[in-house]
Length: 389
Image (cartoon, helix red, strand yellow):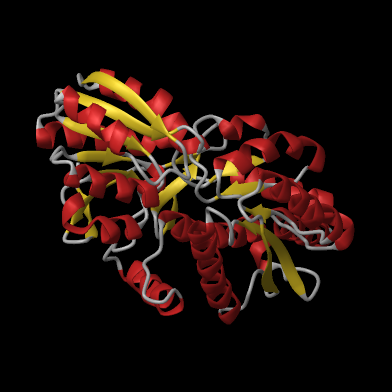
């Protein structure tokens, strides 16, 4: 009798351990497909960032599904084009949440979209994870808002340090796009603080508008100041035009720029005129690690030979992180568990630490912002070269 009681107790204990100790990823999810959403700016002023995000998402999906999917179920990402419009981003998010019943959403990319959307998430109760929005402080707007990227202040700080030391910068002028959220934050708030911190005197601060193509007035003023360097808050197309026009006007100062300039196309467009420019970024497409080289090859085959910007690279990582979170936190994918599953994904992102992606080790800080090391890049021979610091 005593042996029978012991045997029963052991059986119960083993059963309990199986219930509480087994990794959730070992259980097959319900349904024929695990559905996520994606809101990317595939058209409009941010088209390249959206296109790169979509290509990278497709590559990750193909790899994951070829390896068995998520918990044994095929993964799908329903992608919609925000056209880089705030209203479109909001309406498409509602559609994904209320009609298409996705578990979580990758995107949006641009800070203007993200800043408008994040305050709505406490009511919608769904995770959004931006791959490239970099205006500081926005993830604080909701516990459901996350950004697997680095904010502009984190991207720019080591770049300012490198730029100052390499070129012995003592004085500088700032020129920024006042109509773009990230560029305006960099030019009006971030760069002035960082220049002061690193002992660089700010001689003047000038602005332009996104659609401007002639920067001669601003550059002529900068020329008259006789500064050692020029710091930009600008997306890469305008930044490239500024650099080229500056050289035609005889300005030889080294340039510094941040988040929105971190596209490999910038290095290609400026060529010799931009040689030595220093960029703070959240990724490096030419990282020589084997997995990165494999991703780069696949990406360039689909992008007409273009290399991915860091938004594309982090979109790829985001899909893999979603897979990890869904499996690790016991998402069931049952229609009746949709709200509970979304909460599990929120918890998984909030607790994310040390994910080894193609952009390096990443995780979330207490505010839902990406935590990791910034990449400093230098334009050299028409490409970006990583600067160790």
